[in-house]
Length: 239
Image (cartoon, rainbow, N blue to C red; front, side, top):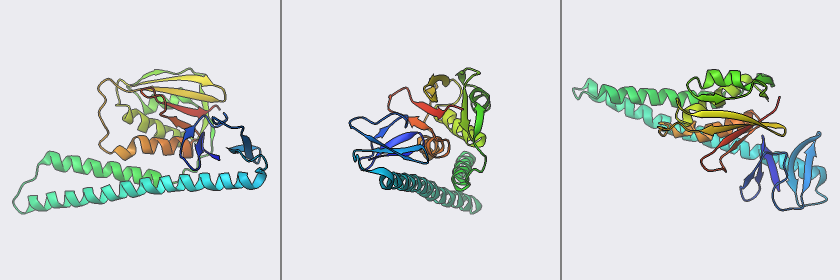
């Protein structure tokens, strides 16, 4: 069975990914599973019907919840470690063993980043999805990137979630000098991504690929496509 998580299909068991989700997975012949007129997966069982569709929905919800919890646990564990390290540095400084101001500053920034990530995961967005001009949000999220996005590119999204996803993507790509370009692809807008020439790894790796995947797929109904090696892309539903 393949289950739909946002705009991507995932094989259960196996974990292979395929997208965008409105295109049948490889192999087959497949029977599409639908609930309420919306596709929720594909199965080899010709008689799967509604029970199989309900199973696909439950499996997709379980996978999404597990990944969110796993990311929260990773951020929380490292946040506690960073707080303990900062406490030790300040204790040493108070007892006559001056700590480097740079080290304290970096630890404080790391704590702030991890706390921000946890807050983002903890608060479920309540904004309704609507047609949003992709280029306008990208101007705010990636001000020093090279942007080639048509004014006609509109996506169906919660604007705050879209802004957060693009901010994270911009940082993951290395910030200034990275590139974003958009092309229509059926019922989607595909945002092609190119990293900055001097890209450096993120200090908090959990706020890169794992956070982008969660925001794009679980909150925006899209697909974070890393299958094309050096040319990652994000598919977002056209608005």
